[in-house]
Image: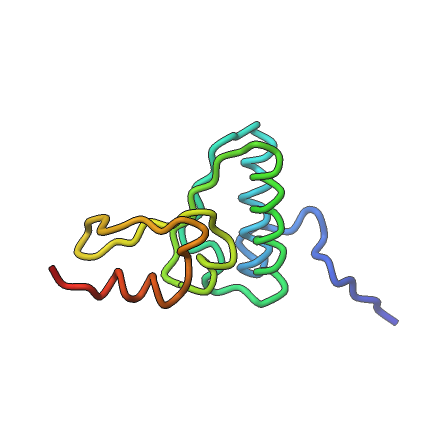
Length: 116
C-alpha cells in the first residue's frame, strides 16, 4: 500500500509544483534574503482560493513586521481587501489616489473610467 502526502517532497523541483506553491517558494527566498520591500505583481493570478488566503495573510504579516509592500493587481476586490492606499492607472498614467477610507471597487472603477 502506498501513502501519499499532501505536501510535495522537499527535493521536488519548483517547476513541478502548483502555481500557489511556486509563489510560496519565491516569497520564501525573499524572506530568507532579508528583503524589506516586496513588490507583488498579480500575486494571486492562477492560484486557488486557499493559496490566495495564505498569500494575503503573508502580506498582512509582512506589513505588520514593518516591511513595505507594493501590490499590483487588476482585481479590484483584492485591492480593497489588502491595500491601505491605491493608485489608479489609466493609459499608463496614475490618474488618482484612494485612501483607505475612500477605497472601494466602485471608486476604483469610477476613477479608472473617468474621462478628462
